[in-house]
Each structure stands twice: as C-alpha cells, then as structure tokens.
Length: 559
Image (cartoon, rainbow, N blue to C red; front, side, top):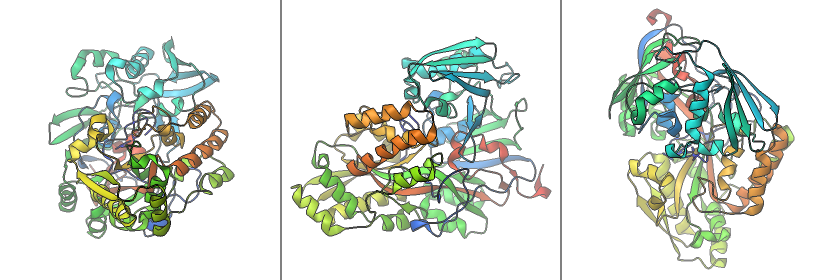
C-alpha cells in the first residue's frame, strides 16, 4: 500500500509505508498462475473452486444512477489522506493522478500525456491540454506543483509523504510541464504517480475550501464524476461531470451507501437496494453467488492476509516462537472458513501477481525457497520448548469487522494453545481497530493482530519496504541494517528484473525472519446485480475511475 503509510489497511495500503490500513479485514488477493501481463483467469491452491475473471461484461448503455455499498464512511476525501478502501473507492472516480493504474494492473498516462526520465534523478511530466476542473478552470502546471506540494507539506500529515522522501524539488518548467528532481534515483516514485500520491487538484479550489477541503463542498478535481451531496453517516453521491476530458461516464449519478454491518450490506444487495459493491463479506460469498439476483466475480488483487507482529520485546522477539506459530497455523482451514474458500495458502510475504514484471527465473527464485505452509505441530512444540516459551502469554487483537479478521484471530489462538502458549484475544470495535494502524497507543498490550495488506503498485517493494528500520508499517520496530541496505539498493534500480533480483533476496529474508507471518493470498471480490455491469474485477478500482464504466447490463433498459 505503496509507500506512504500503509496502505495496506493499504487496511491496513496501499497501501504504503502506508496505512493500508484501516481495515485489515477486507482486502483482496492475487491468485495468478504465473505472471506476466494483465490478469487472466485461473484457479489454484485452497481456492481451487474460485475462478478469476479478467473483467465484467461491458455496459450496453447508460443509466440514470446506480448504488454501491461501502463498509465505512471516509473521515475525509482529501487526496493527501486517501489511504484506505472507502476513501479510494470513491475518490478514484473524482480525482485523477498524473499517471493511471489500469484494470490490468499496469500503468498508463493519466493527466500527464507523457512521463520521461532524461536522467536517473529527473522525471518530466508533460500535461494534457484543455483538461478542466469541476469548477470549469483549466488545469495548469501550477496546479500540479501545488497539488504535489501538499503531499510534502509536514503540516498536512499526508499519508503519502513517504513517496516523496527522495524528492528535492517540483518545478513548473513550461505552461504544461512539471519537472521533479530527485535526491537519488527512485524506482518507486514514478510508479506511485498512478496512485492518490499523484492526484492533481485545482490550487484555487483547494485554497478556497481551506480547512474544510475534503469534508464539504467540492474536491476541485478533474475526474468523470464530481462530488455531490454528502449525507453524513448515510451516503455520498457523485454526479457525472459532463466537461470531462476523457470518455464520459455512463451513469448520471453514483450513490455510495454507508453500511457498516456486513449482514446489512449483503441483505441490501440481495434485496436490490444496493446494485453492487467491492469488499464482499466472505461469509456472504455463497449467498450472493447462489442468489440468482446477480453475479459474484473474483479478480486479481495484490493482497495478502498476515499476522502482524507488533511487539518483539516479549516472547515474539525470539525467532523460534514466531516460526513455531507459523508452523502451527492451520492456513488451509482459515482459507476455507475465514475467506470462504477464495484464497490460497502461502508463506510468501508478497503475492505472485506482483512479480509480473520479473523474468521467469526471477519469479521462480522468489518462490522457490519459501518455508512450508503445512502444519507441523511437533516441530512447533519443540521450538517453543527450545525457546523456553512454554506457558508464555500473548495477546491478539480481534474485531467483528468481518469473519476474515475474527476467524484468523481464533486460528492464532488455536495454534498457540496447541504448542504450549497462552493466547488471549482482545476484541476491539471496528472503528477502533483502524487506530491500530495509526496510533502506537492503540497497540499497547497487543502482540499481534490480523492484517490484510494490498499493494498500491505492481512491485514487490511496495510491501517489502515495510520492514525497513523506521518504516511506517514496521510496528514491531524490526531492524536489520543489511536489509535496509538492500531496500535502498532496490529503490535505486529502474530496470524491473534487475530490481526484482534484489527483491528476491528481500523476500527470502522476510520469509525467514517473519516480522509478519504470511497466511494467504486473497482475490478481489465484486458483486453486480442483473441491472448493471462494467466494473473492473481487479484491485485497480482503488486508483482507476472504475465507476465511469458502469452502465446498463441490458440494452433495452439503457437510458
């Protein structure tokens, strides 16, 4: 999630670090059979009954409106704070970035018609001409300089600030040209310009809104939709922007309904109150799939479900204890129960799909020497005894956000109990669970918690950089100077396979040292009723204007 503060829930993302933030519960996974190019379809592992779809059928005409479920209300829609699912799901249709993530999880030009790299520390963005903000003003290079500058302003506490850590200057070098100078080569910076880190808003509009920017009024952006009525606690409406520079949205209005209860979201989809949604509760997969009122699709995600280690000052500071928990965990059982069978067990910190830019040999090396995913209770017991940890107590945070969180916490408790540990569960309300990613005080007294992390760019380093000393998502203060040096080395390499060869070594170290305990990969799920179609199935919806493609499934119903 990226490298702003985690994105991971990006619930934890997006990622980044990132706060991936905030929800550790609903992310997506990447179930890809080998890996280059856009997602296709496939099956495998514990999720063998799940078939991945590259897309949903294209819309056959326009519609007046559609309704979409989101599990929480965004605290703000300020693009500098867009680091979790609800914010980005909505914002991606209103605000646009210099570059754009595609449904195939590649990058293409966005508000910049071209990005060039004349030397290793220079990126030049040539902007599209005639792009209008929602207030009618024309986008200029000044707006870009101002918008990116807000991400670097320490007074904004931007979620994406880490993305700009190697930036020395951002200057206007022509009416429609912006030049970014780096302190040193940074392979991640240009990739993040396709995320919310690269959003361009109107300087005049943002200044006019002042401290209320992102919470009321317009967002002063350029996307196919503009912010309409925001009914706090209930819904957020987006209205089609007919002055959009690209392909006009098929729907005149998109209504995002805030439904925090998983059962309520599912029932609203079944009744037709809601036309669709991402982040489907795993316990509802079967009901929605078999309902006959619509279609449940699975697509490429870039998400892993993990056990986040938050305290290495106690028993978990001993690698043998972390390895024992990993060996004792029933990953297959969790995938069946916690992820509704839609996932694959893994001991890899990264998904297979995120290595799409690597050569076949590099991908093979990245996954060829991982620890086994199968349970080995006897070996785990021996490690606990050897570490002198028998009877030691550990606390795991859990939450009723969704069964993926609650059942993983229960699986951790069961694994620990079987090998001689005492595992206590601490239940945290859904809203408070988000604080685990942003407030160190919220993590006090907690040794572990379920974490779903999604990548904001298609590069393993998005996740792997989280274990660098001092990284935003490095909650346990894991530190390895050799690892830090490898992160810096990989960051400075632009050629994908050369960079990923370094990332192979990073992956091996994380899999061995277990600053997080990987559990499963998890695909993106999206439900569409029979009235609408056109939504992407991949996690690209976080930074791609996905709602613009949604329209009538039946040509006869189109308006």
